[in-house]
Structure formats: structure tokens, C-alpha cells
Picture 1 (cartoon, helix red, strand yellow):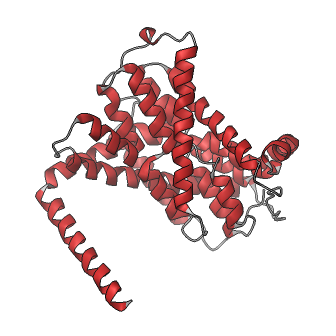
Picture 2 (tube, one colour; picture 1 turned 120 degrees about the vertical axis):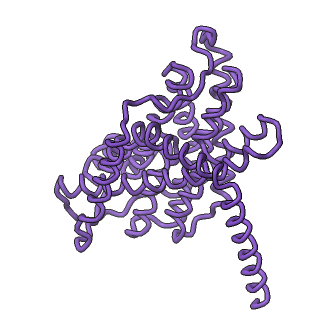
Picture 3 (cartoon, rainbow, N blue to C red; picture 1 turned 90 degrees about the vertical axis):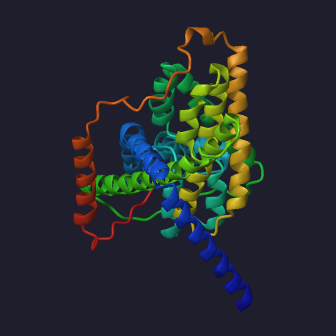
Length: 356
């Protein structure tokens, strides 16, 4: 075992040396890739996703999800074998997108409100791409039409509902969230929500910038453009959606649907970082995501073929623009500073525990 450990360390050292060499030798390319990733975060991801993430977090930590659970309790128990309060996690995931659903599930495990087995079950249908990103961050700048974004988003919602129905056939008992009788003020809930959304947003942007730096090296490889689209899209959603501008309109819609429903390696790494101590089988989770993305894309394909939608009426695929929002560098810097101040001055001595 010791020899095996030494060999692993030796290979890690070699890999690190190679990465350092590549970073130094191709520093200009990596610099341009990182800058591009930062631009996408400031002009696309943060404006389209951040507010939705705050709202989703606030619904989760306040009493709102309990009221939502009471409304849908009968339906969720009969159809999905989960209580109304548990079903609210699925509803919040619809709004917030990844990684909000996984973050809520992780918090419930750490608070002993869910078991690892229950969490594995919920992850099958509680991970979605943000509707704000699909509609405002992709469909509008890429095709100049929000309807396509709604179609792609609704296909993922329908797929999630189908997955929940199929999974419920093997589920023997009703999954319920253990209740915690605690109360928190509106201000505490709001601060916690902004804090959590900011951390999640920083995690997303960090991975996006990292992967765009890696993609700058992939661009140097001599290979067909189609292979680059597949590699980038499967690794990071934003990049995959950006480069489909070279495809036909029909192909670009299907590719965006496939990439956004799967999430990519970037999203999976984010979920692993949040659920690393929760005994989750990520191999099983990835296989479910592959199935999820195939079903979702098939729904989009069937809709285009069977409906009276006319692709010629839509604007053709155009160059992905990063000027979708009127964002200045100064305002972006202030946004980052305010977020850091919130994180630094938040009273960490007070541990706020929430119930659903």
C-alpha cells in the first residue's frame, strides 16, 4: 500500500510539473481564456442567475417552502412518494437551477433531516439548469428568441417529473424531511440566502474561469470543430453554448438542450464539492444525468418536429454576445466588493439553523 501511495504521489508530481510548464509556455493563451471566462461571468452568468439563486435560497430557508409543501402534499405523496416539504426542494430547483438543489439537499443531510439514501433518490430529479440562464443567457443572445429557451427549459422540467414518477415505482416508503422547530427572523433568512447564493455564484464562476483557461489549450489542438464543440460542451455548459454559433439553427437548439440538461463536468465537480461527505454514489448520479439529458433533448426534438414551429421565422444563430446587459467594470467591481463585505461581516458566531 505504501509503494502504491508513493507511485500515486510521483505521478501527481509529474502532472503538476507538466501543468506548470503548459501554464508558463502558453501563458498568453491561458490569459485570454481566463479573461473571456471572467467576461462571461460578469456579463452573462451573474446578471441572469444571481437574483434567481437568492430567491430560491430564501424560499428554502423561510416558511414559504412549508406552505408550498402543504399545497402539493397530496399530489407529491401519491405520485412521487415524497412529502410536500420534500417536493418543495424540487420546486426550488426548478427556479434556482444547479447547484441550488444539491446545496439544499446537502444542508438537509448535515442537519440530519435527510439520509444519504434519501438524498441519492432526490438527486435524480432535483438538478436543473437555471431558467434564467437558458432563456436570458442563451436563447435571447444566441437566437434572439425566448420561445426556444422556454421549450428547452420546459423539456427539462417534464423530464424531471418523468424521472420522479419512474423512480417512485421502486421507492417503498414516503420520503419526509425531519422537522426542526426553530424560528428565524426575515432579516436572518435574507442574509443567509444572499450569503449562500453569493458563495454558490462564486463557486460557479470560479469553475467557469478555470475551464475557460483549459479551453484555451484545447483550441490549440488540431481537430475538427465538431469535436471541440462536444468536448467543451460536456466539460462546461457556457462554453458549449457559446460555440454552437457555427452550427445550423436546428442543430444548435438540440446541442444546447443536451449540454444544459447534462450540466457538464464543471457542474458535476461543483456538486461533488458540496456533497463530498454525504456518501453519494456519483457514478450512479452521472449515469442518471446522461439518461436525463437524452430524454430532455428527445422531447425538444419531438416538439420541433410535431409542432407548427417555424425555425425560419427565428433569427439565425449569431455570434454569442457578451454585451447583453449594460454592465460597466466599475459596477462589477463594486458588486464583488459588496459581496465580500457581506461574507466578511456576517456574524459567524451565530449559527442559524433552518427548518422546512
